[in-house]
Amino acid sequence: MKRKTKILLIAITVMVCLICLVNAAWLIIQSGCITGFFASNNEQVQWNDEVIGIQQSIFWGRLLAGLIFDALLIAFMFKSLLALKSGILFPKANALILVVAAAVNFLYNFCDSNIGIVVESDRMLVIDDKTLLLPLILTAFALIYSLAAKISEENRLTI
Image (cartoon, rainbow, N blue to C red; front, side):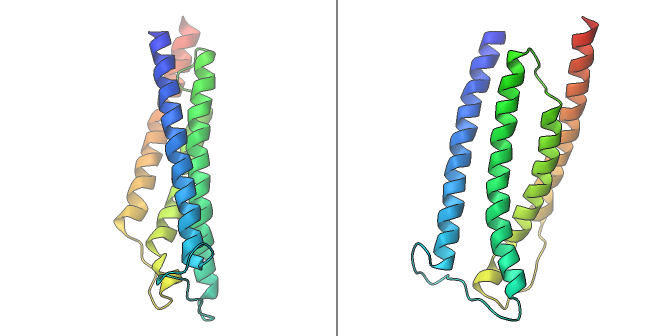
């Protein structure tokens, strides 16, 4: 059972790493296209002096939060993999990573929902259901994960 678990966790870690790397590349390329760095297209940034601070915050917030979120997912998987070598299935540090990932995901979703302000400077700020739902699910998962880590540690100490 332990060997199968390790092989499965390695396979999932590789898949998550690949998905995160592709997502990071996509974010960088898309951000470069929006600014006209990689290509010129119709949806290029239209900086407006009245809202340039908001535009730049949304542009950089989306890019950096997306990259940080990918890095947190990779860190979560590697910490899980390293902890499994020690016989720990639910490392406590991963609960904190999930909480931070939920906060970063909220920032990313907020900036992604409002990226139109960067492209079309006359749009208004919005907070939609996507902005709140996934961070709430990640926070709930972090709480459940924290409980599982606590129970796992108690079981390990009992035996």
